[in-house]
Image (cartoon, rainbow, N blue to C red):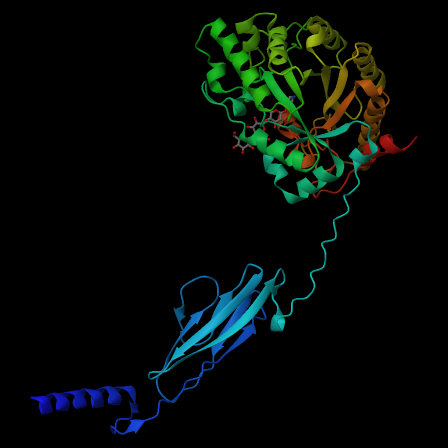
Length: 467
Ligand code: G3I
């Protein structure tokens, strides 16, 4: 028994020894050939963040290879050809190649550095040039002692060329349509301030103010259908309006410090009464449902909601129509301390209204110790209604420049205590609402379609800088 056990043990021992040694097909033992891992790493000539890895390991027997790119992922088997690896984030990475032959294995590693310029050649990163802060461009706002305003849309804020001009020349933004009731109160039970919040965020990031426009406007394009077709009682309508004003002003409190609370409440018809039941979208559901003192009610709701916000009444033809201007002053006088300012929409023409008419309006506001907002400035040049007008003639461009300069000079001359803002209603001529409104080409603004400044811009600047 003992002899037999010794024999079996000896046989196992030989077996174990045999399996640990390398032997070729002839069965003769061979020494294990060591394997040495090797690879080349080359930075791509087309993308400085891409490394080309070439496995240069040589071994006389079959072997397998795997890569660890140092990106935190599991090792991957080395495929045919080179490996292309992208290192997008600056940092330090260790690349490891593992090769395994007949019972032997080896690894090769290489560390790389990546900075904002890409993979650093031979691990040496070029010194990163300190970002030279762009000199803030000087523009209209830098020469005015009042806010220089611009009507914007969220879409245009996100266009780089627009944003560049907005930052250079303007420091007060008015949403052309995204802060009106149809957008902000889309259903009886929901509010949507997303667009307004995004506009406020842009303004805050660029040291600008936002002027809220406009909470209460009868215009069919500014009202949600559920309001136009309101099915409740008048008392329910008034409660809805109070809730809308309160909710909106409290949402934007401290971020939007001024609002056109009520817009265009005065009719253009004889005697300039409050808009009421006129047809063709000219009537006011607010007047119909809340009565003749609805404007005062709305200002009271607003004052209750935010004692600090600046509240404006905003309307058009305030200079060109003496009767409408006087109707506005009657309305404003009735509001007493509830109102802070008047927004005079300056949708004018190159030749009208006259300097004296504009001055009379200004004098009326100043004499009431109210803030004056020259709002919505644009200067029509195609007053003849020429449907084929393809461009602005030089003489008409010069006349437009003179009108811009005249308006800014008038505004610039008012007492500082009455200054609020002068807002232009759009950036480039091809964005103006007037083309759709008058159904003929118009060129009423200060910038051409390619963002170059027109003589009108020079007129604005000269009014600020030329004594
Ligand atoms: O751009 C959007 C488009 O993405 C969307 O699909 C479409 C449908 O909802 O609407 C488009 O927006 C339109 C916007 O103009 C484009 O700028 C709105 O529908 C349209 O209602 C809006 O019209 C604005 C209008 O007030 C009514 O809110 C004009 O831009 C704006 O210039 C005009 O401005 C008024 C002042 O608020 C008050 N004074 C008069 C002035 C001119 O009417």
